[in-house]
Length: 80
Image (cartoon, rainbow, N blue to C red; front, top):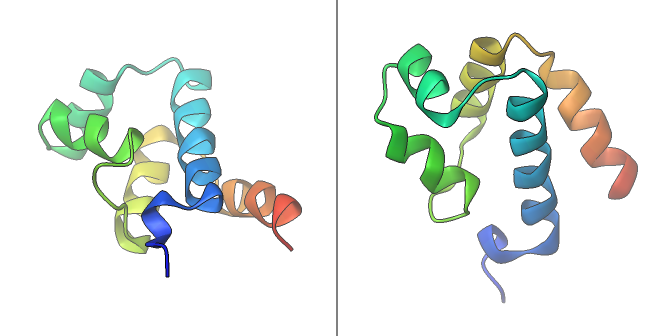
């Protein structure tokens, strides 16, 4: 069984997260500062090297000032 971090679904999720960050006009460095994490934290989850768990997902959404439900809704539209 393929690890889900390498699945098409997870890659789509990561693309949505990158899109949300860029649409918010925030760089990886700026987001990392808001999260009180190194820039490598943001880079690693965006390239799929590190899994973003649900609590981290919610924290990132809060830092980006985006509604987590909107990201999940976009994901569910593609994978009902």
